[in-house]
Length: 596
Image 1 (cartoon, rainbow, N blue to C red):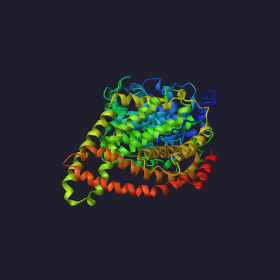
Image 2 (image 1 turned 45 degrees about the vertical axis):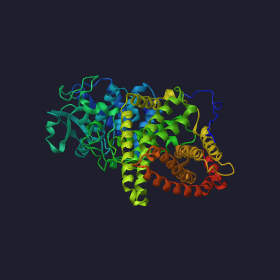
Image 3 (image 1 turned 180 degrees about the horizontal axis):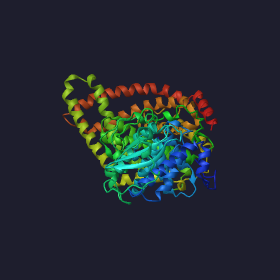
Image 4 (image 1 turned 90 degrees about the horizontal axis):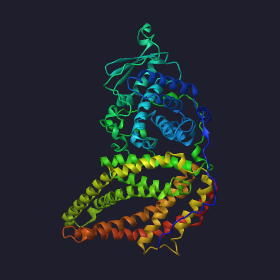
């Protein structure tokens, strides 16, 4: 049976191109209920720091305006999603066409918002990846300043003032005044980790309560003398050190939680010696305590509305999945957990599903260029993942195999491990390739560019029909019963079921928690069909080993056990399918779509 494709016909829905209206900074601050007193205070502190160190670090004058805008907007997402307001704020900056900002400048401002809190990991940030090297460097410089300035109004009282900055060797001391200066200064110092990485100097703070007030009469802006050690000439990257590799080589981490990555971000364990990725300083557990006593009236996420342009929702999802892909890439390089490869493949599949959904609203050229690029990543990872799955299953079934086959099982395990090692090396070569790096940057640029997308079609214009068409394509495999004798067709059915599941999950924010009832049976079906696919893949991988004298007996015994498993799955499959095909499921799915 041939694969059944879904080709939505939406071309006639819209004949005009929607253009996002230009907006201003004051409008954004009002629209998203930003604490403007705090925003202005952080902006003023940022500018004071900038003016003080601009000559010392040879900062370009044009950066000053971008720093002010980033400071004003740094909490833009706080009233939408407090725990992840740096990520949501980044999306909001990229959502709007901001007056008097070029695309490059807007992406730099988005980076400042994304980097103003938590660990700064540029290699994971889509807005950063879309920039050229010089813009990346400038964004990190400005983010370093913003982080310190934000800390200096930690208590949101606007009472801490920067009186002077005094250099001493590789240390800059902030001379502060105000009733909260000690606590705010401590927070500013804690957030100076990026400053140390980028500028090569340490920040300390002294408050008026801790020193003679007479010594704190310097004007607020006194340019510091240039110093050769940490200075970075405009257009060069000497102060970055290893950070030049940020856009090409994600660092290692053990974090693999694809579903809750952003919520659990501060629990990740990273290599404290990896200076290239700026994450050697753990976030304080009290980072958000400045908001604890505030009563924030939350705004509904704009991308969860059914009337939102599909392209807006899509760009948000693409950034999420690209970030997860880059996180998985770091773990793949470390190669400490086989789940890393799984996370990488899941990220590629979600990216491809999102791209397929967005095809009607993409105007940046041939969408297949992007889907093929993502597909290459998935295939490179697949060669490793298939052997990981096989090795894990072989290990689990080894005790059930005849004991005289112990040497053959060991030989088979060794042979498969060698293949896996070679596949992993090939994957790393691919991830290090210029082609891959070029694709990642192009992909990041596309998802962050308003010019590449048509915002006319809304989620409700396409969402319901797309979900239902995927369901119809899945049901088409049932021809008075499932094709249980045709493993290849069941494999195609598994793929279609997975695509439907991913499409449903794309609209989770819009459909809220109601998607669980229709996704859960799909997951169960997918798991059962996945077992059959794993067995088929294992048979293919073991074909050559079955002919070898040293491993052949082990292969025969192992596949016999898998055949027994396949028989059990095929026997239970019709009942599993009925949970997706019955009237109750169809009614629940239809009721779900009404919400769009």
